[in-house]
Every structure is written in C-alpha cells, then in structure tokens.
Image (cartoon, rainbow, N blue to C red; front, side, top):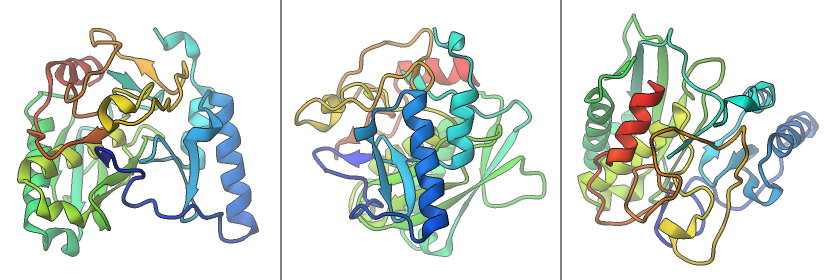
Amino acid sequence: MLKKAAVLVASCGAMLVGCGTEAQSENDQIISNLIEAGFPADDIMVVDGAVYVGRDAHVTREASEEMLQADPRTAEQYRTTNLVSTSVTKICVVPTSQFNSYSRLSEGLDLAIENYNSQGLSFTMVRGSASDCSATISARTTSGVGGSAGFPKGGKPYGTINIGVGLQSYSVDVNEHVITHELGHTIGFRHSDYYDRSISCGGSAANEGASNVGAIHIPGTPTTATRGGSVMNSCFSSSESGEWSSSDRTALSYLY
C-alpha cells in the first residue's frame, strides 16, 4: 500500500535481481507463472530478491503455482484465487519488539485486528502468539510510510506484514488503515482499484492486471472503485478513518 502520489511501496527500494543463480532461477519461475496467470509483465518487479505484484504484494513460488492451478470458471471489490482455508479459525498476529516501540503502529495494529473481529468472520485475529493459533502473521517494521504483505498459500494467510515506521508521524487512524489493508492482502484481497491505480494514487492510469485468476470480482461489491471508497484501494491519504466501507464489509462477509 502506498501513500497517495508515492511512487513505490516503502519496503521496495531500488529494483535488484536475485542474489545467486538459485534465487534468480526461482524468481524467473515465479515471474513466468504470474505472466501465465494473467499478470502483465510491467506490474511484476523484483526487489531485494523477492517478487512483487501490485507494488506491495509479495508472491512466493508456491503462491504463483496455486494461481496456475485455479479453475478460471470460479471467476464470475477483488480477490486472488488463493484464500484462507476454513480450517484456519485463529490467526495470531505477532509484532516484533521494534514494531511495539512505535506507539501509533502498535495502536493501529490493535484497531486493525478489531476491524476484522468486528465482522463475525470464520476466523478471529489475536495479538501475540498462543498455543491454539491456526496460523501466525509476523508484524514487522520497514522504512518509509507504506507497507507490504503477500497473498495466501496452502490455505494459510501470508506470514508477514511490513509496516513503514514513517507512519508514526501520521494519525492512529491512518496506521489502522494501512495495517488493515496489508492484513487484507494476507487473506487474499487485491486492490479495489487494481485496474486503474490513478483512482487512489493520482497520476496517469496504471493497470495491475485484470486476470480472471488473479483479480476475481467479489459478488455484491462494485466493479468500479472510488477514491476513499475502500480500505483496499492502492494508495491512502492522510485523512483516512481506518474503518471498513460498506463494500469492504460485503466482501469480507462473502469470502469469510
């Protein structure tokens, strides 16, 4: 997720190739899988040895392979083909000590967890580790004011969210918004304006890729996005409330 008018997600600095032949080979395979799944090549980037799509969604080899295996007939707000299994009933979100040292990031995490738990979903989220966690997400810090995460694989949410420490200078509501957004990616949400990032980011139109396996419309939600209309918009502003929109709630209810 990016701050409005920013160019790249905070955790994504200069583009780098993989470090070593094995890492490069795996990244080449991930990129090949993504292109076959329908993502445009110019939306795929390699940063610090990891492959990203949509500027802030990390894709592993396993996740890219699941996208290829999905049945396109299931295509009918937007989601990936990869979702969290019904066997996952408790997701533990574990912040690092550095994350906890930033008061607004820490409070934003609590509010983001509350956002999910308020919707009566098939899973609950809790802060911290526990013996009965079905899955665990590590909340870590990165530079800048954006964030990054990834898509589910193997029925589990993506295991990490990275939140920019620059958000400490923004309101708690903005922190809540960004963290809720990145957690949304971990359970399978694409950007609401994936087809035209300029809706929330400004600038010229940029399409992340309207693939019938990578960007599936969620029934009951709008097929078009509006600025400020969803927590899952690509970019955020300094006036975000951190709360779900009506279409966000519909999407969550439909999927989980």
